[in-house]
Image (cartoon, rainbow, N blue to C red; front, top):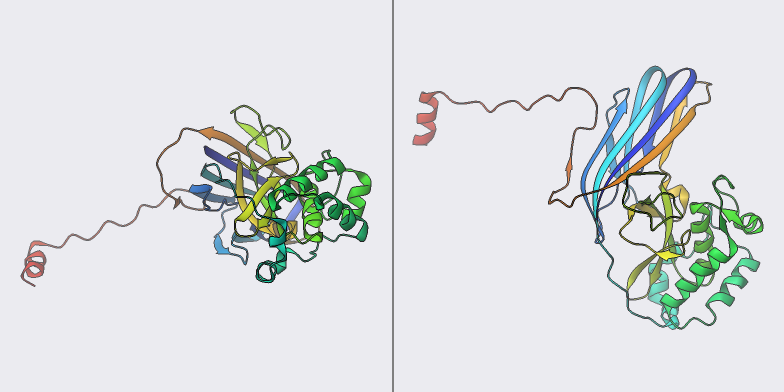
Length: 319
């Protein structure tokens, strides 16, 4: 599936600020299930963009603007080709006790900033996987349990809400579903990580929507490690496996590792922030990844190669 994605964010300040620095994580990754065909980042005011890859392999683009301004705009455009994942084979539950597997995945088993579970949640998770017939079955059971606990409700929580408070409220959005499922998986010894990305759907609970241009926000789901097989991606918000409509930006221990935007500015004004993601399905074409210019304004063509005069050309031929 070929998808074109446009991420648009605008900061508006009630009074001028003098300096702003931001970093964003919105560029899709190259993976076996997806190929990044094209990517462009533009800003207004124009900024120089510096890109690097963080510890978890996510592309981070950093830029800053020094000068008074009351509005700052970021537009990130990408073209991605996705394909179905290969099915994983069945693995017994005892594979999770392998010492080498445990050591290789220790960071995905430990509590993190937004994934702190209590004994009550851990006991509930153990009861869920107690009857699992395989590692994959355990992940699927935990997926269903997450949906039993939470219902999807926009603007019902804040980023970083503790898991016990989340369970008590019984409502959340995609990052809440991901954090809760990760907490339950880790509590029973199943390594898991938070995935940030895009979902081509009318909203993040309408995974089967028709192929029309849609406006969404960034989405979140879960990767569970299966011994000897790799990562098993599942979408707890929709209680379904991850498919061609999901586009991965990056992964981390929780939301903090892959937050789409972080920044600081000099001034006392509190900004109004608007963000929109537009996704449309396009015809399949054979292209390769190329970074186009990262800022607005007229493009300057590269200088033409120097053409040697006849005498120089003759000397070069003799050499």
